[in-house]
Image (cartoon, rainbow, N blue to C red; front, side, top):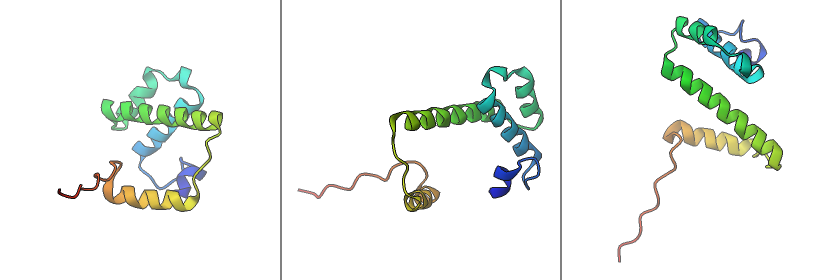
Length: 105
């Protein structure tokens, strides 16, 4: 949603989501400063330990992937492929399609 990217504090999302985005911002820009108070704010906003763990994991993986891609020179996909990939994932999720059935012999 464009509003989240422009100003998360004014975006039409829940206060819990705003707290989560603020945490991710801290994690991205000042990870060494993340502390117990940051986690308590998320819990006070209604987030579970599992949701917080997942948030940290996804944030860390995207940071890793972006640095790996930048450092190795991997090229971005065309926008059309992102669109097709998004449509496929909306229907089937992240799991790859099952392998084709082998013809019976």
